[in-house]
Image (cartoon, rainbow over all chains, first blue to last red):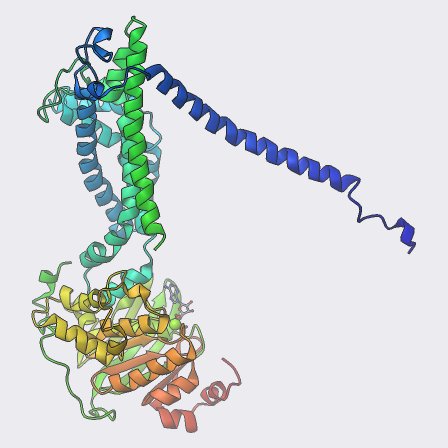
Length: 300
Length: 279
Ligand SMILES: Nc1ncnc2c1ncn2[C@@H]1O[C@H](COP(=O)(O)OP(=O)(O)O)[C@@H](O)[C@H]1O
Ligand SMILES: [Mg+2]
């Protein structure tokens, strides 16, 4: 073999070209990431910029007004208060309903239901339901809760509709959390004479709880921003006080923001932006809670 | 099925109120406590055990040995009906505990498992405190005596008390592997079962932890009947009074006093297995 022909170790030629392709690929991937992050940052910056000067303590504690100047500092005071409280009530009620129904369904499907075609059919459909557009749930809520059950455009009807919307996601998240509980844990409890119910209560649920909570909170933070379903159910826009009964009218932040945004006066675009900042803040707080729970229990 | 549902069953009546029986020696009482008769087990279409019959003596250590996959764990799970938890498993034949067939219709497996405790291959403490791990069985069985005392007694019997008495409130998962396994033994014996089943309890442990468990098993046999699966023949020879040799295909080929089985087995296949020609 002639040594002068041995030239495979220098950095020229095809290898260098391959490296270049590699770098280009990484660059493209990085840009893709950047597009998402930059778009989100721009959006946030724009909303905050638009709301600048319109966001005040009064905005959180006063009901809305027809006059834009009332929202400004030094005005008579106007804001998002009834819708903020309405959204919180809505989310708390929805949380209660979804936790009971979602965890119940997940426990049944994972721990009790026989592994047969019917169960698989139900599971596949729950997964499908998670993809149904929210306006469809709104129509369903209108037909079932508002009309058929005679609840009217009430807080209860609104939260039940949101429950339908996120229930499939909560069920799937809870199922995953329950499935992640090792069988060795179940066997340990059976081994000392636990009944199925005791195994579920003492071993499965405590271990699955952080996962269930994380999934539930993330779904709730989706629900709190949903406009279409509560629009269909008939959330009020000009509520001047928070909801006062389960069967009474209610307002919610997305609905209120939507209402401001469609007013003709340009000033109300700033008010809508201020409302969006409040909504986003609540949403981010909820997501942060979910992440905190997940981190706290993951690192055990 | 709730606890209340099970209370009128003959195997549940006795709550664990009686203290630990203080037995005489490791030589046992000479009585048979578990009698398996023509036990056959299938997983789906595959038969895992063929016509197993044996009599397990009270307050002695009975070792089940044999190559991997020969059905030792399957047989062990027949005794406390843990096979019920496997959908595909089907058991035929009789396993009598003090004369009562545990597969009779009127036997509640939950009640049975309160009499027949189990320790698993991999230590599986609950993510609860050391104390709560040991007290778990007592709590669900509605024990109304002094739980603190029982927890201490169980931890002492499991040779763990001195090591954990200052960290009863710490998580059981903080313990070392060997300690975790002794915690699981304490958890199994706290409700004072009659039989303790152990499925390769030391196979995931280092030699020091293993020898601790072996010493412990010897002590346990003073109060309990111990049935232990092991794939380690020296271990079986060291700790057991009786040895059952299973061979591939799920047959029991030899059962008798450990000394006899190891010194001059009847079956050539067992001799080959014991002398290391296969398995
Ligand atoms: N849950 C199960 N489902 C199906 N087959 C099983 C199951 N458990 C064990 N088996 C089969 O039964 C036979 C005996 O297994 P096992 O009792 O675990 O043997 P050993 O404990 O002696 O290693 C093996 O062939 C194994 O594959
Ligand atoms: Mg095994």
